[in-house]
Image (cartoon, rainbow, N blue to C red):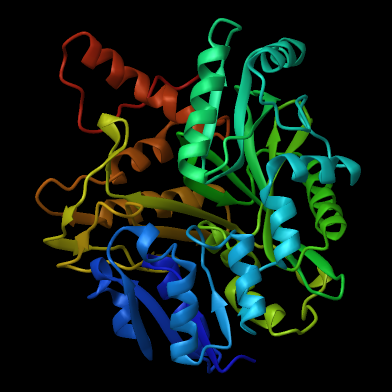
Length: 471
């Protein structure tokens, strides 16, 4: 096993990885920006290296600064967490050249899967079902309009280098398409440095389901079941659960089989996630591969008993998988809610500020992954995730009741601070979600009454109201 692991990240995932390293007897080194000088993971680590100012481009995204920190701390491995450099093939290649183990897939695998166009072609060859769309990027507006007409509207325009719900635009008609195509390309070039895009048919009422896999360098692959991630705003997840409720077992088994098949075809190594869209009629379609640990990994850990970060470290150290498919026996139901410093009533605008009071839930089968405490300042520079609250219960009904109780215990106070807690509660209580009739459009439907009230000049309620339940 490694002697020292440098954690090239911040926030709750940095602390999560640090704790896993400590449990395995691995020395913990971390990097931090000036904004994170007093962070929990800096306090927790054996050694911490300041690598730059608050702006991520000059700190957490600076490959030279991170590599120099690894040299300085004597790290023999780097864990990138999620976001930042976690899916950067160039970074993984630099690590290899420096003799530092990158805890993730090999650079060539990451490069192939990170390019959404190349990935789709690879998965098509491996037999995974794809939505109608283009396998090659489209650059000419005239060609794009012609292909969109062939695919049929609505059409989604996706950045080849996109990720994290960014670089996506939806055109519902031919009239809208030129503007969506142009703006998505512009956004992709600005955010990812790559303006290439591809087209796909857009499923409006779909479930977002993903399969967690583990793979070693010897060709062994196992899946750890599925997660439902359909509750989203702006294509970014708010609530996740395992297993996915209301899906036929045969459909889930087929998804899992395709994920394993895809991982083997790509020669994947480490923890990864294969994402699918399910159309509600028994058909599902491959979307993309996430070459990293997922934000929502706790729900899989709670239902399987497998510590995914432990397994990442074990695999990266060169060992074969220590579990087989027969060892993965999911039990019960787990639900995760992301507590963000955002105002749901104002289109989830971030609300940075100082936390004056903080209470997080506890009690039986409640897990809280957080990096904040009373006195923490939520920075404008980073993702506004404050905490992940995850619960487990023998069945979904009891898990949702436990989550409702846990959300009631969350208290985050500070000047100007708002959180998504009340909105998450409204989702948990909604008829669509509680009866597993939800899809990726649920958040928009729940927000419609508030938007209509504001449009009519009526003050919107502080908590989004639930629509009438179906009889």
